[in-house]
Length: 63
Image 1 (cartoon, rainbow, N blue to C red):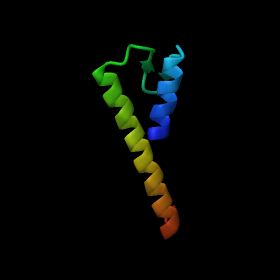
Image 2: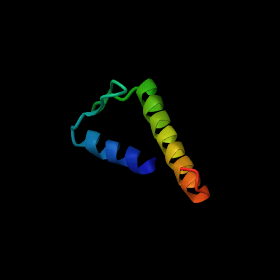
Image 3: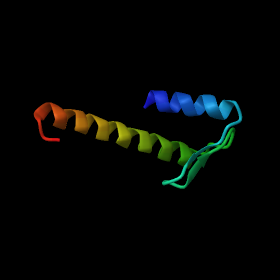
């Protein structure tokens, strides 16, 4: 999750807008509000959770 946040921060600091198509969310340089930051963080947390579950399932031979 920290890598994703770092990457987006780097891109937006260079003037690049980051658009998440499925979520219809755009992070623009200097325009991150509290809601966008929260949604972005939640997306990352759930993605990490899903990766961890897949890793556990593979270890247990489920997935």
